[in-house]
Image 1 (cartoon, rainbow, N blue to C red):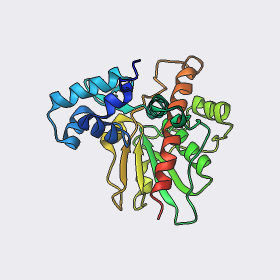
Image 2 (cartoon, helix red, strand yellow):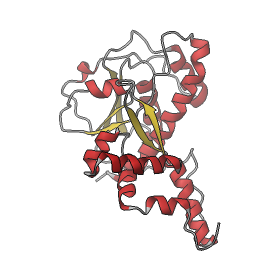
Image 3 (cartoon, rainbow, N blue to C red):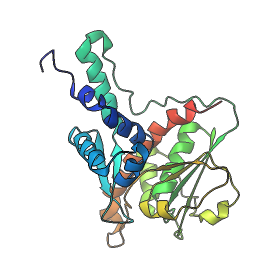
Image 4 (cartoon, rainbow, N blue to C red):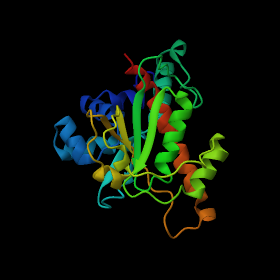
Length: 256
């Protein structure tokens, strides 16, 4: 690369509209029409700049499980962190900084009243219990974490129990799926949906919590055996672990 050429991340992020899109996607996954509303620009223009961000590897898409004609956009924060580190190094070696390692938890929640976080998906048998368990583990009880579903299954999926044990060394065998109707009247600071269908059905909770969406496909299709389907649970758990890690400094930043 010529020393006169700005790094790709700078060229992508420096455009005002692309920066606004990156900022919105840093907080939640969104569909195109939602981003159009948030940035107040024509859909054709938003779609064009999203394509550039996709081509640059900063943004990825997942097909909506609620409406297969639609897609959610997701910002790859780890790739952004690496690109920022590379950008600093391109300017001067003294500015090169290694991205935060995946195991580092940059969170300081202090002794203020606990934040409340609710994770929701359809069955409350895999995605949301995994997220609940990981956030509770990383915050050591300093965040009040709960999960629930729109149509809870009778029990946790065996592969959810297995992947949490094998990948993170945690035991969730005692958890049971619950319906979010059981949480009526509870106040939360964040309500995070991990399922496109659950997002559409999610009710309003007291106190107007911040709503965030993580578009994560169901790792347990009905026509796949537990053994054959386990790799999908490993991918899902890794995705959730990354998103929980990125959530930690956000929760820390909003402490009084």
